[in-house]
Length: 270
Image 1 (spheres, one colour):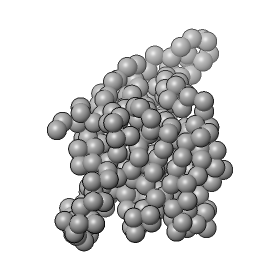
Image 2 (image 1 turned 90 degrees about the horizontal axis):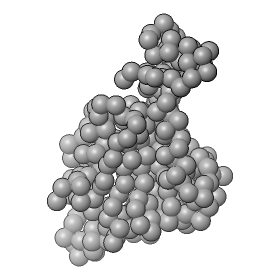
Image 3 (image 1 turned 180 degrees about the vertical axis):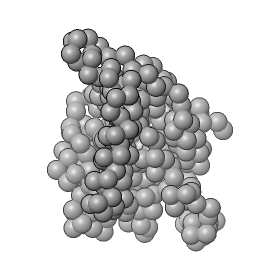
Image 4 (image 1 turned 45 degrees about the vertical axis):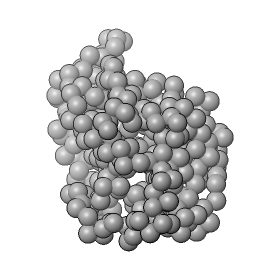
């Protein structure tokens, strides 16, 4: 099964519109969806002209989590011990295959905006955390649902959740598996803001980002990723200076200044 059977991608004016299209299963994560997420994310890391990415789900939900067939295999004993989750081949960043389906979106060098509606349960919740920004509907239902199945969040959830919400909030939601709304997700720090139409607003933001100096946007993301990695103050301060020095006086930075002074739309080169 090809990636196109699970995910559609269109790129227009610098914006990659990525949509999960397994609508009959509420975009649940089966083996083909894992492969499609990784393949698409890896492609967008080097796709010429991409300046921002929007990740969403078609149909009734963003992503309902792990496909039920996987739980059936666990219950029957067909799948035991995670099938080598610990010993599996890992990326340079330390991810196994399932984790990489989430972390690949954080590794894309341009901003990624997740537009979330319906449900984002378990692995689907962790997937949206891989984005830089998350727009949600007020009635979106979310859950760190793994405890329902006697499991722990293992798709980079602990790496990402601790960057967004208080430790006690993450623990309470993980221990209980309690569902919470999009409005609550904003309060907790898991979502950026509530929108009537998250995808439309995400595409509008992506278009705005695509109209900025692409080299400055990529530098911004590198700095945020460095800060999130636990780097020390001295390293971050130096990195700011390095990035700024590399930008000042470049054609795109000059174009940013001139377009503002001349009150016209900027034209940037990738």
